[in-house]
Image (cartoon, rainbow, N blue to C red; front, side, top):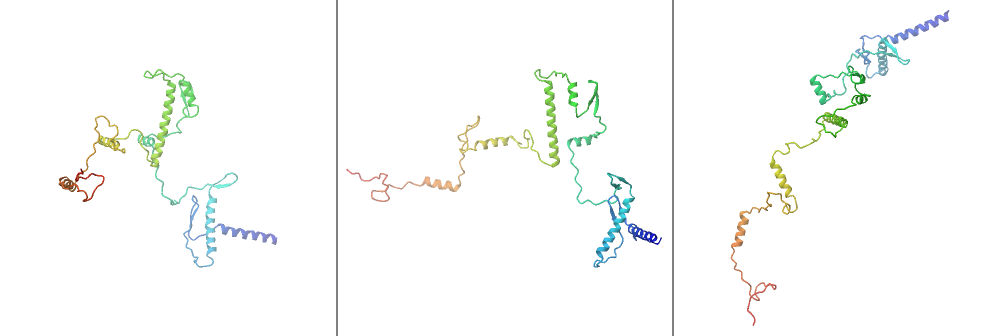
Length: 292
């Protein structure tokens, strides 16, 4: 009997020690948020920073707070998923601050902007995949798989328009119009993407009147193009009702004009040098006494 009592006493002591470890008591109750698995302990620390037992005391404090959190988690409703017990966490109470700024709202496309202004709402769940066709007298898909086949069965006869060409195939015209619509939608989709990314797209078609405000600019451009050759347009074929380009004389200053007038008005007093006198040019005949 003594041996049995000793074993029972030792087991009860172990259970008491385990209960002390599980049931943690604090002077001020800690705040526990099960949703974010957060424990906020507002009790004052009596541990000095320079003490040797700092590390062990911090470990003991962390263990106690973790134990309190685990006690709360085990009190939550649980379920078994693939032979593993899982606790269902509630919604978080503590709102954690964001590490980065909020993303900017996505820019609306043309259709989304139009739908917002007109109050059009998407309701995919209310749409039925099948619709009753009175012509075929059966349920046909409203969109997606096998819809084209149903349209082909329904449109076995296509009426020609009165203004249509007699040679034109109406089925081919319908097919080309569908391809054009598809290409137009794809182009619009790419434009919406470029608009959202703030990418400038070059304009297509004729230039606007902003580039050519006046007809004078066109005439100036034509004149510049005419004289953009090595001969400055002298040997180019001139269009009708246009004269040949005349070279304008440069402006003559008063100083140049005066020097030119002085040269013209200077008297010709120079005489031909006599034979044997002065500077003689052997290539030019010089007057003198004639030999008989």
